[in-house]
Length: 181
Image (cartoon, rainbow, N blue to C red):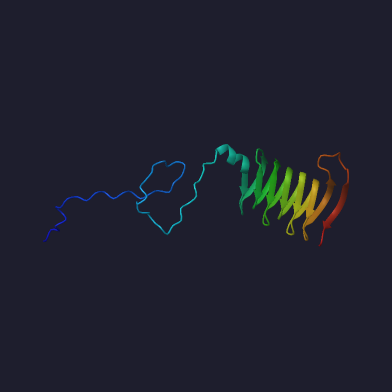
């Protein structure tokens, strides 16, 4: 067995470490002749940490009831956004409700903004804007600030304009409203 002559030879100097991507956390300076670890990959832009309180303010608290999930007999509180993809029977006071095409909500809700792609049945008070999309259907006692109904969307029951105004101001009793474009 032959031993390599380099085995017993003088040790070579350690190679200089690769130059890292500069960012706010790295303040070491490396020589400009240091090899780049992977020259084909672009350097990512520096990422600044996001304060936890800022992130909570942007997204708020969100509850998603997924497909095939049934949530029954509850009171939902302290929830900024409720996303309904399954079935919910509840009472709630929130900022936003989003009911997906397969989703259904039955009960009572006081909301700032409601986006209905699926079904809502019950008492709905929308302080700002009620949007019923083409696949959406809202039935029951409904009070709203602004109303948008996409072609094909359905609204039926005791409908009243003015979520903050006196009862029956601009009220409309109907069996069904369907707006077509």
